[in-house]
Image 1 (spheres, helix red, strand yellow):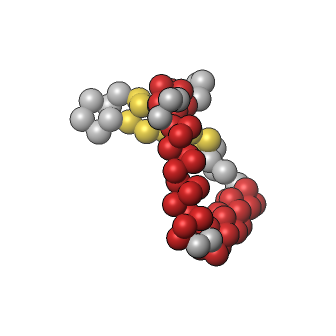
Image 2: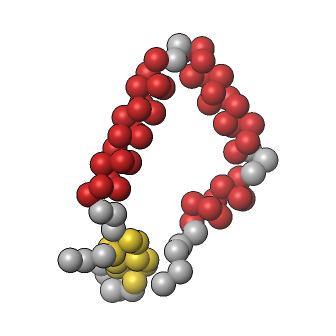
Image 3: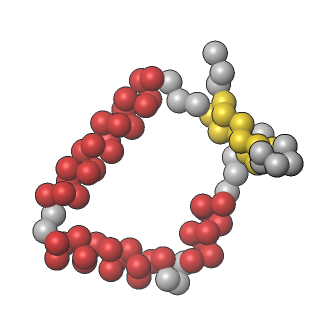
Length: 77
């Protein structure tokens, strides 16, 4: 069974990254957590959602370089 997913540029064949594949148990747990998070978010009022997003923006603005670095980080091979 394959244990990782390798992404390649379809034009050049250059390897862009490899990512570990999760087991079915881990996927089920991630789905459970995401469903819970979605239900929690859905239960918030519009004003509470707006406040949460505004609070997030106060972090993202001054920390944009840190956020981008985290987003572009590749796991070691």
